[in-house]
Length: 553
Ligand code: GLU
Image (cartoon, rainbow, N blue to C red; front, side, top):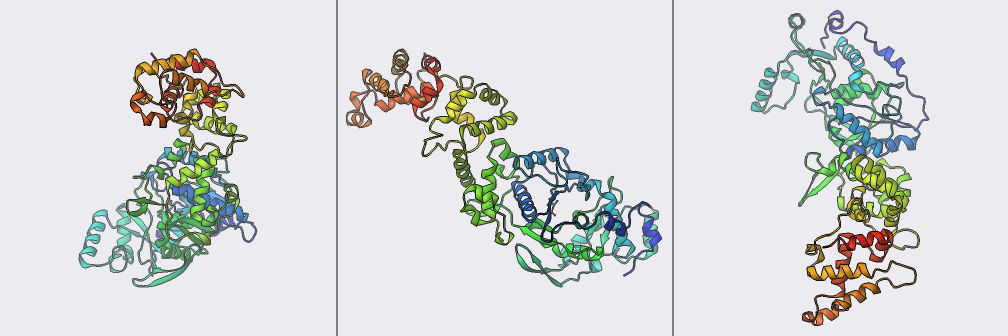
């Protein structure tokens, strides 16, 4: 191994960088109980987080909490081109919505903390200290290969059937003569710093993944770039080096991350070893999948709206339902438990599947509807209000101003004494469509007697039904069979007393009681599908019922 002389290496770095030994002292091992795990979630900010990110973050949080450890959030923003400031606030909204509160690094946590900073772009000097250390020890070197040369190399490798990458005979700067390096540096030519990989082509290595067990893979042979080009405005390391340095200095004990990184473990182990760090345990979580026709593929933010965390916030999925569903996907045992128990039960990494679980929105809708059905009207209203504050301001104003009406509406076929409450809400965005008609501010009275919602009842009969209903209206009252007025009105206008009677002799009637009451339902609610009409009229109050019945012209 031919390292560059120390003075030459040092001339490439700021003089005031810390020495690795100082950093060991500055970031000492944590004082935690022996089984405590220090975990982290380390997203790169690009748009909304993927729902799989919430999944991985939740797993990290869960493992830290149940082991008495620490969960930290680290923002991996070394890729400046892809960095989006807006994305960070979207991340925060997502974490907040899903109740994923970091002990270190997150909003509300100590962002500069003992082991911070927690944003990679603020950790430049730490990375530089270790790049310098590796270069001083001949374990990293400057590489002046230009993008054109890299392209030509890749083309030659392809043409000759050689494996891609910077290694062996292709690694032209690995052992370049010192004077050549000096000349290029003196000329101010841009360079990257590459890691001198100890791996050889064809070598296999084994390691243990906490989820996947023993894995044997090709060793890394590639002299990967660890520090980006010297002419970049902000000289930052690549993910590989940054992750190793950060997880070591933050004293992380268990890296739970996406499966796409499993093939990088041999490289990461080489880096841990070269830097003199203890290796950290890894658990690679399989990605969430989507059924697409006959096949399964990864759930993709580009193709699937439900892949983006923003979707769950906008739609207002109840967090407990989503968490319960995701936990059940991770540990099938939890899907069999009641929600409250399943949320409190620790996740077990050894029960995670190696194949990616399917995210089935129909299943999630069902779980959500069941969950919402278990809430009281007050709880639903509270959540609808907070959701609407952010996503439907007019609705928020209405439900706040009309709290009593909203509670009456929500108590229809729900609440005390109702054996099977309505399962009409899966998410808060459904509220407007399902309950909006209760509110005069939201309901659009049906004014056209020929409206198709009247289901073929003639405009004249619609008008007659409306007038008769309004003129003789009897508000619901205990012990009085309210529907009798509809029955009497229907009969007086010639409708058959039952669907059966109507079908026996369709020419004798304009329709049946079902058509007549359906038309009245449309007048009152704007839809043919609503809960029990008497209960709806009770919730609305007489004045509003009459206003609606009289709106049709
Ligand atoms: N920034 C990486 C990503 O978003 C993090 C991977 C890791 O958790 O180490 O994929």
